[in-house]
Image 1: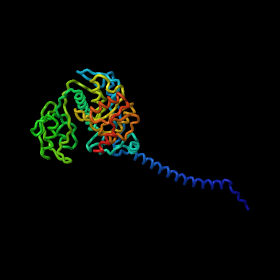
Image 2 (image 1 turned 45 degrees about the vertical axis):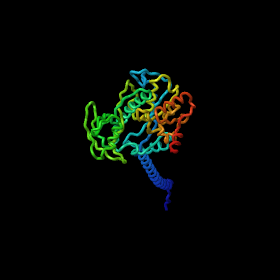
Image 3 (image 1 turned 90 degrees about the vertical axis):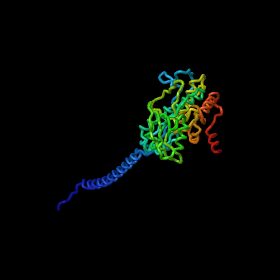
Image 4 (image 1 turned 120 degrees about the horizontal axis):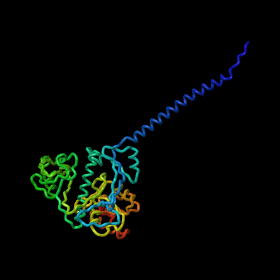
Length: 381
């Protein structure tokens, strides 16, 4: 009988096949897990990158209006003596997401969690028809208008009279004036009533019959035009959707040298302070580094609220300002900002601002009007 001799490699081969089977099962499970993880990561990354309908606000640049740019003063005056100041008066800006752009989820979360940034729904910031191009154009017009108002306010503050006539200001999209009037049109008459001051415009429109056309005679590019505009009632008021603006007759030329990309109306207060300082002897700042913000609403020096106050405070603090001028109407937001050692002072007029800067220049520990006092007074009313 012959003897069967087993190959000593048979058992090893059997165990090897079992190991391969287990390895294949483990590999398939591992691959499935890795694929699921990859899909999850890709999905999360995709979701994080999808723009959401929000606007992110961040600090922008600050500009010392008393400085020089390429050897030329930022505040340039022709026809009147000027005086130097060894301190700083800084205008502040913010960076905001353009219309119809959106903010990725991750960026929105970062802004939401940041103490120095902010995020808001786009519908609260922009109109439905706003675009990056229209916003840039409007911002440039606002900057030009704010400079004119600031120059007028500074000169009136110094006792220099500045004649003016009302013109068409910014026009709200979708309102009756949109497409009929153009910004900077000079009012001649409305419904046969001569227009000499802004109150004439307000009076005629507010007493007009809603949904009945009014004939506007305006001057545009040196030519008179007759344009029908039909007012309507919004929130109980008869309106056409225009803001106040003025064409000033300045006794001498004042220009402000700024980068083209800076726009908007919020630097008016700092423009006016810098112009007044430039036209008067001595140093208003006393050598101090001062920043601020606020729209100059009229030639009488009334200071209006602006957007992004918290981010502007951050920008001024990081650029070395020791005092920041806050529009009194922005105090509710300013008290939640993070100024560090920089002092905040509330102002409602150009006169307030000049007095506050003078007090601070004389004594950096001087008592200044605060936002807390403004809010306490408002609550008491």
